[in-house]
Image (cartoon, rainbow, N blue to C red; front, top):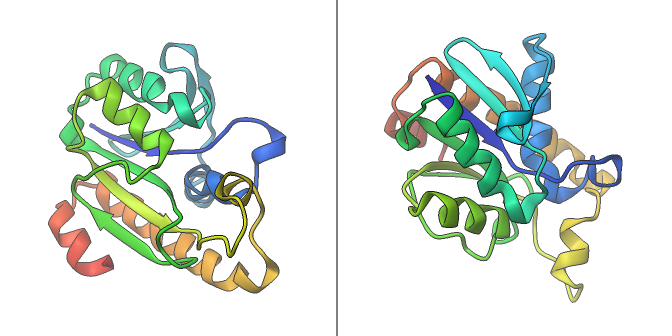
Length: 182
């Protein structure tokens, strides 16, 4: 079984913000496949099932995402090597995707929380570029919405992430995914 995690913050206030791109990708995937997210208290989040995979949107707020991820891995008895995390990245241009098999948090507090709870940075990830603020506070920037001019790049990349999720859920090797999508 696979665990596919999209990082974000719960609540309408954050729904379409840059920091919630992980949620947006999972929601777009679920919509395309007519899946519904349901509250899973034991995982501190919402889950949907697809093929041999569990899609997880933690409801613990970004900085405590590790609580939900660790609970889901334990509850569904999934190995960390079978987990993929989708999250926003300030260091990449808007819409740029980077797949990595492991790595540091790079200052991302949601990823830091996951690493802290799991005791390892050895999990697969899709970093989704959200651009970086020009002279603005990064905390306010990540909680802002995408500009209309960024719409095409964001939609195209969400569509690419949907393909990545589908292939990962169906067992395609991550090295092959990196070769195709990086």
